[in-house]
Image 1 (cartoon, rainbow, N blue to C red):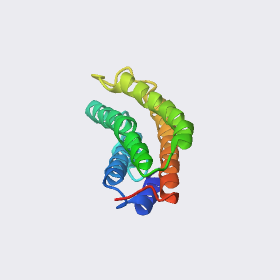
Image 2 (spheres, rainbow, N blue to C red):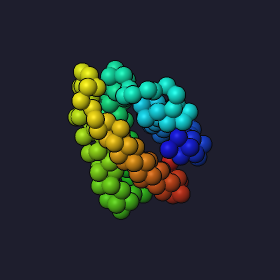
Image 3 (spheres, helix red, strand yellow):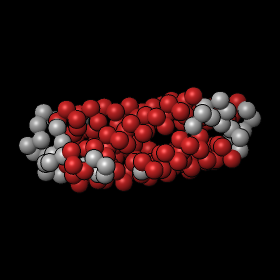
Image 4 (tube, rainbow, N blue to C red):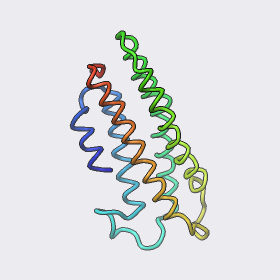
Length: 158
């Protein structure tokens, strides 16, 4: 996932201020996901479950990321493409429901862990975090497909 985001930043970074911010937020989210999941290069920082504060902070960041995608970035991209006389409606109709599915998984994770006060009864945390990781991977694939389409049709402008 981190390498996918690095490739996206290399490919579309600098093309549009909103996209730069979005990819930066995505990078921060992924780094914190890898820390919570104790994945390389952060595998040595966790023994047992993560700290409650780290889980809560990650959940807040997760909700901010999925919300900014739905309510800011996607709409802005589609609106700007339309203003240039181009339509991405077909692609949006294909991708947005798939992205929404990943949003539901992220919001369910937040609902379950965003306000926890202890990790005493978090037996399914690692399994839920893994499922979230799979959803984030899919989401990034869909987001990159959208960016690629816009780029191929010269719809990404600074």
